[in-house]
Length: 365
Image (cartoon, rainbow, N blue to C red):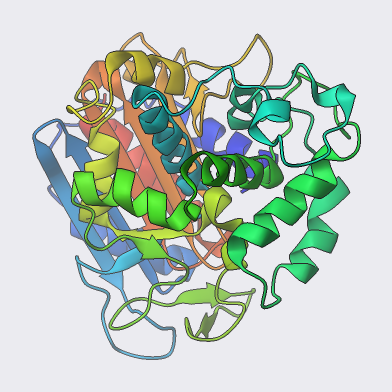
């Protein structure tokens, strides 16, 4: 996901409908199928989550374009950059355990590397809010070519950190610039704090305690939907290279999960941490950086203003690896979260946007 996608998500969720529909599920199956057919995509799904669980869940379409195998309610969906909120929440767990600090300078977290003095004022909190001066165009193209090699994923993340931190920031400190590289660096910092790969720690601190049994990394395999590529929507075999970004990009966006399990993670933000995170951690995770556009917290865009937010900030984020598209909208004041997913990317934007608006009208108006 890039800044354009973030702004598209904010725009789509920032339009309050004048229609006062009843918060029921009448006609939702037909609506889903209409939105999917109109966009010409293989599959579309969504869910509405409350503190008590899932109030509505629906899917429509097929797992692969050109075939008849239907997508099911338990299929797993690639979450793309919505992984970032999980990486930030993982760091919050380490802070609560006394193993980390939100104010930790990058120079201390990467004490094993040569860090340019220009990074002295930058903390990991700046990475999580995309305000560290890390610019993707300056480092990601070359790194992505090397990231498909046989090197260990942790070493590949360290190599990116070595490149980025060994020179002055390419961007302006404390100014928003959406950065996948910044989250890969955050993952590398977590690996230094734990002595384990980011994947291992995410399983131990996020997936397992929350019961996310379907969650994993990369394109989901087995009896499941496939992602689709390009304008022709060609299904991409998850066993083939290119079905996802390189695994080393993980902290920025490689998690997949079922709708039910993704709902379990998002419900944490409706239940005051749900005994898994403290109120203090939630406050940090959902607090945007300094004034500026867009308002961005730790893995979340922050929306204020529309009536459907209940007069309090709401959280939103889109995720895509160019073969899938996922959106989450968390509205704490209304005790409701919306999820929209598709097994295509750009062609699915109209369907995701239409489903978002319909769910707002039905469940948040």
